[in-house]
Each structure stands twice: as C-alpha cells, then as structure tokens.
Length: 163
Image (spheres, rainbow, N blue to C red):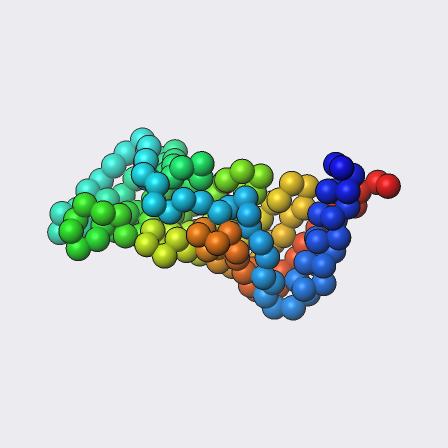
C-alpha cells in the first residue's frame, strides 16, 4: 500500500514537472488547506501598535497560528478591518515559513488575506511536499480549497520510488 502511494506520488510529481516547464504551474496543496475561520494567535518579541493607521507590527521570532497552520517570519504587519477588532490582512517579511500537515512553503514575503483565505508568497519561493520540492518566483495558495499556483520559472525535483 505504501509503495503504491509513493508510486502514485512520484507519477504526480512527474506530471507536475512537465507542467512546471511552463511559466506557471497549478498544483494541489492539500497539506496547506486550512480553517480560515479559526482563531488567529500571534507571538513575537516586540509589538508596535499605530492607532492612526490601524496597524500593528509584530517583530522578532514571529509565529502566527491558525488551527493547524503556522506561519513564522521576522516581521508581520497586521492590518485591521474597519471595526478595528477583526484582522483583515497579514503582511509577513523576512524568512517566511508556512507549514501545515506535510506541506511547507518558504519565501521572502507573504500576504495573507483572512477573508478570502488567500496567501501570496513572493521571492525565492520553495514548496516542499514530502520529498518533492518546487521553486518559483511566486506562489498563490487558496487555503479554503487547498489549491495553488506557482508562477515565474517553476522548477521541480523529486525522489523516484523503488519497485
């Protein structure tokens, strides 16, 4: 059963590799599917709040958790909604890492729009799914569906299974 699953995964990655030769590649991010309605918890070394523009900046060892999903970065700027209590958008910069289940994506920057469940990662994007890896300039993930698209000279590598 495990060998069949791995063979299926290898075949899937081979198919993705052929698609990835184009400028963009659509891929499934089942491991990055998340509950966008779950409570958001933020931890950091420092918090700076601006009442003037309705933002908060978390810096130093920032970890954002929402359900099983975790996002870490050097800094995360929070833009609040009109009611000044709900989080509208998270802007993460510096060594951004998004992890959920078996998938992980890292990049220089990320923008997470809470209401739509969309995460846009840019700059040196690397996605790992098990032993498979894909890199690109940009990754757009829909956390509600677990689907995503990699854009900008997509490259993929994988480890073939033994029969």
